[in-house]
Picture: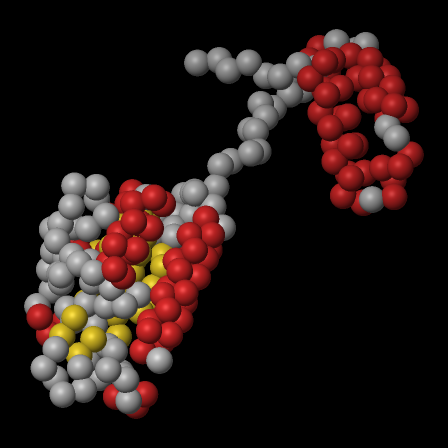
Length: 218
């Protein structure tokens, strides 16, 4: 009976660690990836692969090997191992009798993004209503939003003084605008926004071709 239970637990762990990588890979590379949960594994001592930081804890076991292998293959890191909170704000699991404390719940993120996390600690108290031996893990994530790129091009004004200097220029401009209007598709008229954009473009192109833009004089 005991052997059958161990076999069932092993299969459950195999399924979990087989599915977890696929869930993380659905997040686009340019987005922040944060995986939180009770992974029932300690991080162990610091390694040289940026998976475990200098403040890892616990003695490695089978669950730890699965966790660190997953992080190593997918470029993840165990966030809590990069922070050094006090003991009261470190252990995520405390046994019922209070004799054992471990760091079993973790936050995983991409190794390149760990610098965006400014704080990591455990809070005691919120677990009391749920009668749980697991404590609340929280972190502060700083997200830098990029400004949208400006797509509108600032157009230089037309040199309207030329219309007064050349009596034939207004007629040439009217002919150029009319020719561009004749080329517009009738299908555009079914859409108000599309019609306005086409008309505006035609007028601006005719002005650029016939009148030209005003030169900056310093």
